[in-house]
Image 1 (cartoon, protein in one colour):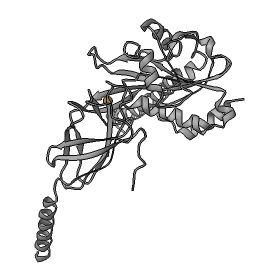
Image 2: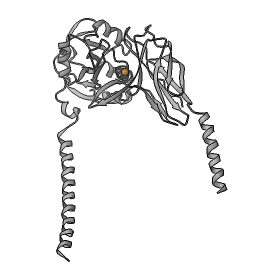
Image 3: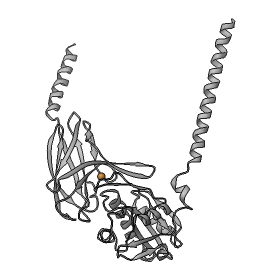
Image 4: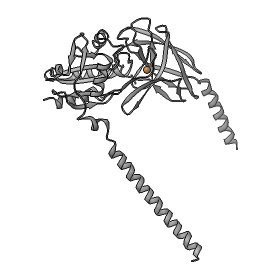
Length: 204
Length: 148
Ligand SMILES: [Cu+2]
């Protein structure tokens, strides 16, 4: 073996070792990143919920205290939303209609507007009646809605400043216990059968 | 050699037959959501099947029910639903695209009437190649179960 051959041979080895090492570091960092970025649900289970002051669809002031003692099934959206919100509210209504009467009566379904500038209590009243007779609509001032958005870790923002603006928003349905603590969240377009089954299993 | 020529001729004739069928766009499963509150936009959905042998594009939608209709899509990022207008929907040859809640949809703004469950509206879909296709659309609050 000449010196050159020897070097070439070793260079190959070194490169191979380097590649393996880099691959290992790569995999390890992917694992670390995964571990350090828990999903919204993992992160927020203990953090979601809290005090709020809003106005219901009957134009009455309400706070979180008015909802304690019952389970709350709550969705954040806006009435100008033509697709996602009606879909999720219909799912909520379908799930409620699948519940046994003794489970249903323990639950307050709530639709909170993330678009308080356009969703007045009157608009909320007109909108919610299409979904479920028990559904309560909540809206308020921009500040009040901002407060409940941050309490519930809801993201919602206007897409632009036109009068016909749309709102980008998270599309989770939260199931809160009798003390206003998060029990479970459902993603957009959950199957109503599954939502009803989960609710039934969680209600005492 | 003869065989190849025959095969080529067959292929050519097949090609011409299918180009006669070009732009065969079939619309089905169309439905529209009711306008729940006056002034709010509505949504409409349908399935587009391209039975032709070239791609076609849905470029726009018009209706006597509204002066402004837009083609929209939803994108979900980190749990946030974002809705945005698209210029067109392309349907490849032999493919189909279904507009449905949470995906592609037609936004119907500033409707002349607050149409309700059980009403009907008209939609005219304008395709780049297939031209205009007008459909009567039932207004219903839940997606009809697709008939297959
Ligand atoms: Cu849209």
